[in-house]
Length: 206
View 1: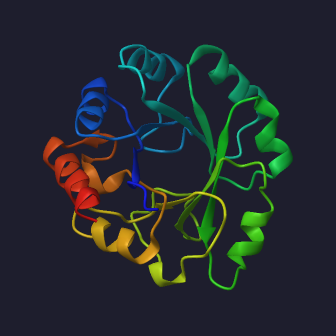
View 2: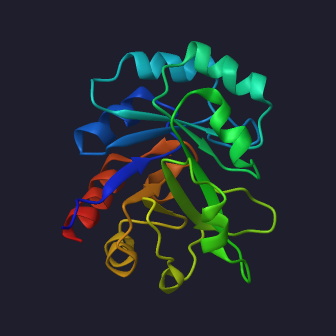
């Protein structure tokens, strides 16, 4: 049985982009709570956007090796449906917040990705991103999709996706979902309606 590929638009910083993404069929919106990121949002910014969203949209908070208190502070003030951990967090850390979560893993050369996935049995899903020696995601680079692993977990494809390549990426990986940020932007954190539209068309074509 084949499922429609789910879509998350990450790095949302403006209400208008959030509403455009939803109108075009995105399933989830990502909010970056990682200050070094050019797409980072404040608690106030995220809360203001999320309070104005229609129902049935998954709101995802992205964190990178954040102190537990920081995550708790965001959760206390921002209605997030899902947490996304993008650093080196172990499962014991990820599962302490009484909120569903996904774990991002980077497709690093010579790392047994299936063994890494097995370290997170409680994750709702695993996001596979391109590996970069300095960056924890948002690299704009893709990895070799032919190395896509098999897993019983829902696997989410991220890294270097664009309206031009998303259809091929889905064909090669059969990913449960795709996650895009830079590929639909005119500048970091600023989405572009025509790029969002073209990206969703690419997903639907697959």
